[in-house]
Image (cartoon, rainbow, N blue to C red; front, side, top):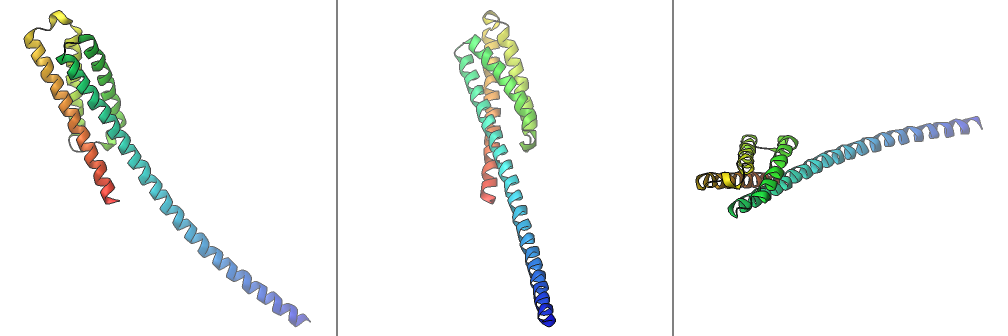
Length: 167
């Protein structure tokens, strides 16, 4: 009878060792899957942030177009409001999405912000201060801002599409 117990004990010890090794392999494979999932989640988060940056640039580009339309139609009060919104939006985007800007984007966005500041100051002077030469400069600045922001939107969209093609 003692030999039968020794055999069972040996068999159980061997089974426990095999189960322990199997558990080690399963733990390793689970760890590998978790690492892959974490990488996928990080890539997805970055893609969403790039998309959000592009969306914010699209909104700023639309506001620049609205500013231009208001200036062209001599809607001074509406243009002032669009200018303030655009200036605040550019300042926020410049700091929030700085890591996603490429090439010369930070300088171009800074240039757009300065132009919008000049536009706002010119509009704040009042309707009587906007002579034909001033209006011409004002419209030229509005066009430049709209163009700059549209270009930056195009760059952001291109970068987002390049990321999608590589996935």
